[in-house]
Each structure stands twice: as C-alpha cells, then as structure tokens.
Image (cartoon, rainbow, N blue to C red; front, side, top):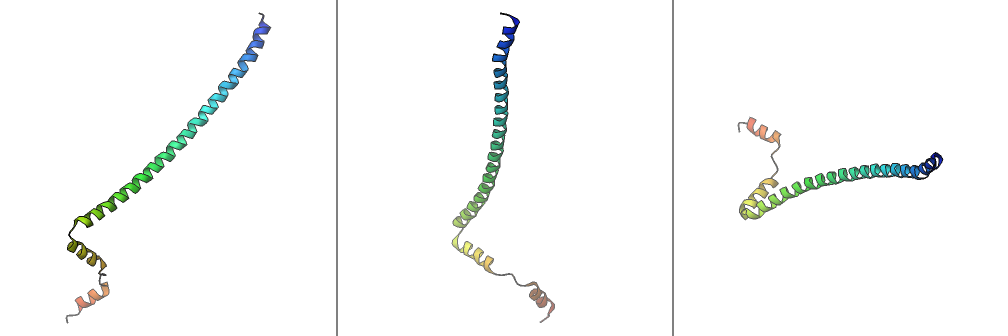
Length: 99
C-alpha cells in the first residue's frame, strides 16, 4: 500500500466521517436550543398556574369563612357592604350647622 492509496482511503473514509460529525454537532446544538425554549415556556406556564392557584386559594378561604360564620353575622356584614357611604359634602354640612 503506497502513499497514494492511503491518501485516497483518507478522502473516501475521512471526508464523510468529518461531514457526519459536523452535521451531528449542528443537530445537537439545534436540539439543545429547542429544549431551552421549551423549558422557559414550561417555567412561565408554571408561574402562571401558581399565580392563579393563589387567587383561587384566597377565594376558597373567603367562601369557607362565609360558610363557617354564623348566618346573622354574615347577613349583617353583607348589609354593611350594601350601604353606600354618605357623601362628604353632607357630613361636613351637618357638622358645620349647629342645628
């Protein structure tokens, strides 16, 4: 086997191997970036779910409190919320008039 045959063997075997290595490297870099994007998306969704979960927990606490409180006490609280506050001008006028 002479140097020309070794050189031809390197070209026939070496170039395809190098090409496949470069191709595999690019594929794995692409796949890594794709997984990073998916991970960021999953983290964002998890944060949104956690936020929504805390809102729902607060609402459940309020509902539990309403259910466990006495009926008369709850009705009084609802009526207190329904009453509109007096306008500021009326309260000042009544405080200024010595009648």
